[in-house]
Image (cartoon, rainbow, N blue to C red; front, side):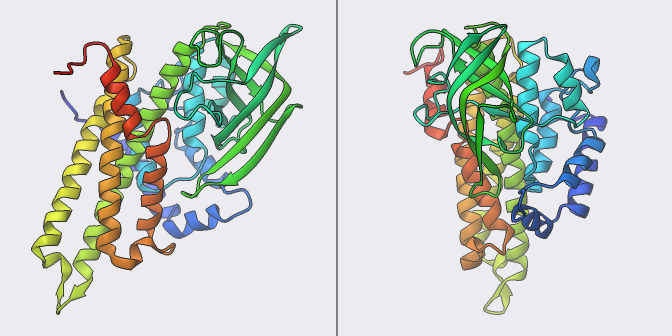
Length: 375
């Protein structure tokens, strides 16, 4: 398979990298992270100006109709720069709108940067099983009303609209009877508790009390959209993690070149060179599978999509853990301090592994797909 990127794709990524290097430094990020809002309006506006919000939106709604491979390059750069803006949440929500159809007006607002989205899918009992839904929706006149609670909604406190999964039928763990809704985050009956997570991102716990909601797609048949949307988000997370691993490897190599012991740089020691070589191999393996997932995530073959995304998420989780642990150890005690970027990069890798399924979950999901050979 040809993994070469086009000139246009690379130029797009280079423009984003130049902005991050110039205006979104590690120190700038820390100031944003500790600010009252935890995000930067200026950074968001720059992402809009660079065309990042328009990238995944269809051309008919003012976007560039970018593929998951296009998004792979963007997310790698955002991972390398440790961006904490609500970009991933918004483009994931936009993908749900595209999959469900009939949301052209909202997609136009996303493309123009006027609308931020978040996906309220997880509940306290569901763990990684997104079909385990206790939140319920019932008809209310010409619309619906939602009641229930969602937890750890990434950038839920910064969103203008929420993509919410709720049950309109079936049992709590059935895939049948699941519906998706668009909810105004500022509507009556929506209560949000915003907080900062350990990796510097923002999340919110959200309670719905007869909140007005607009049906997204077909009632009771939302599972296929939910499953495909979650795979898309997992693919973007894999790409982000690859960018983080690239940054960690570069930072560790630079440290080994400058830190001296016995009068020579510690990078001269063969044992440490072997560890850096292994870190690079782990990064390359993760990068290859993340790219493959980006190619296959839009496949009409659902089994192939699930298998490839789970293989990538499992490999990225394993590689991220190895690269992060080695980077911290090779930096010595400094590797866990708040002043060093390595610690923040490792925290983000740890959170990515735990989002939308950890290594064990995706290994089991991979093995459960039809056609997997057990012997």
